[in-house]
Every structure is written in C-alpha cells, then in structure tokens.
Length: 288
Image 1 (cartoon, rainbow, N blue to C red):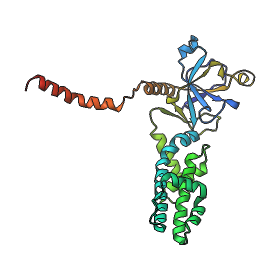
Image 2: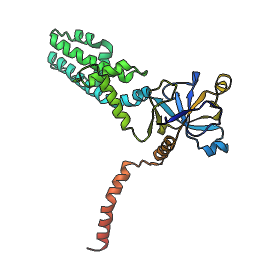
Image 3: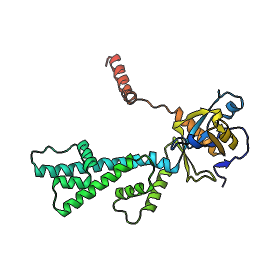
C-alpha cells in the first residue's frame, strides 16, 4: 500500500498537499512543528496568493494526545477527586468541630497546594493509621491528576500513572490498555481532525491535521531545498507531498468543516415552536 505522504527531494514548485516541517527557532510545539499546504494549485500557479500560503497544522501523535485527548479524558476524574477530597476533609473537620461549616473546593485546592498530604495529616492531628493511609492515598491521586492536567510538556510516565489511577481495577503495567485507549480514540476522530500515519525518515508515530485551525505564512517561509533554510529567509522545509486519495479526502473534510454553520439554541426552539404557532394562528383566523 502506498504511504499517504511521498517524500519530495527535488526543487519542484510548492503545491497543494505539500508537507513541510518548521526548522530551527521557528519550530514550536505543538502548532509549529509540521504543516500541510491547502492553498489551491491554480492559485499557486497563477500567483493569486499575494505572497501568502494557507496551511493546516499537523500535530504529532504525542502532542495531539497530550493537548486534546488528555483534557477530555481526565477532567471529569479531577472534578470527582476534588469533590471527594473536599467532602472527606470537611467530614473530618466537622467531626472535630461541629461548628465548622466545611470546605469549599477552592479552599481544599489551596490547602493541598500549601501543605500537601503530610502537612494536612499533621494539621488535622490524625492518629489512626488506616484513616491516614486512606486520606493520603486519596490526596496523592488528586495531586497526580491535577499535575497531569496542569503540566504543559508531554510526560509519558505521568500519563500512564494517571491512566492507572483512572482504571483502578486494571492489573499489570497498563501499557496495552493505554494503547487500546489511544487506538479507540484514533478510530473515532471528530470531522475536523484528519489522521496521517507519519513521514518516512521522521520520528513521528502518526500525525493529526487540525482542519479547524487553518493558518497562514509567507510564501517565502517554506523552502523546497535545504539551502534556502540555511542561507535564505525560509523558516520551514518542504519534506513531502500528500498523495491521492488522502489529499482529496483532507480537502473535502476541510470544506465540510467550514461549510457547516452552527446556529444558536434559540433558533432551534423557534423552529420547534413555529408549527404550533402557525396551526394556532390558522385556527383563530378560521373562526372555529
């Protein structure tokens, strides 16, 4: 089977579907890593671009999972743990002092950030080993998931640890289960994300074209040979070209994303009520 992306090493002109990599200081993850040109060939040939190129950012597998899948997968777990920790601490405080009103989630968050699990146990004066262990384990789980969602740079070990917390009944190291979760996600991508398996010679385990985030750069920013990057103004190097039918499918999905028009909820309500209003109006006009 032919790969989605064919390596291009010659100096042929830029075309729609050309894949490029940002180089040197211009490379900034996750958005400025790779890109695929979506400017039409006819506009490129006839110089209708006014010196600009339209492209879709390509995110590496790691960046896509970290910046898009991670928040959706773990935010609800963090919310649950915050509520559980808050309820647990409030219950202990009220037992020690019946007049205590309990903690808010924000107060719990600040207390954990200041004192940590050991400090909280000390400040509460807990002595029961079982209670200490349960509370400590709960706070540690919360801190792990909180750290996962606040850490900007991808951390594979932190992700796996958090995944095992989420799936507490899972036995074993969890690598296969995490891979299966990734596979499930890639198999059911939203319409504004297009998967590519990668580029030969580049250590990326798949890429994701983020169709909704169409961007622009200068025509001179993307070079077709290395010298233009090293000695010219170019900031990116053309490395390959998206092949048929993948190019046509990507541009078709791109058109579909921007042709869909979202309408407000009030419009849907009016649409639902209009038939009844019309019938009522006709009934009254009929004098019945």
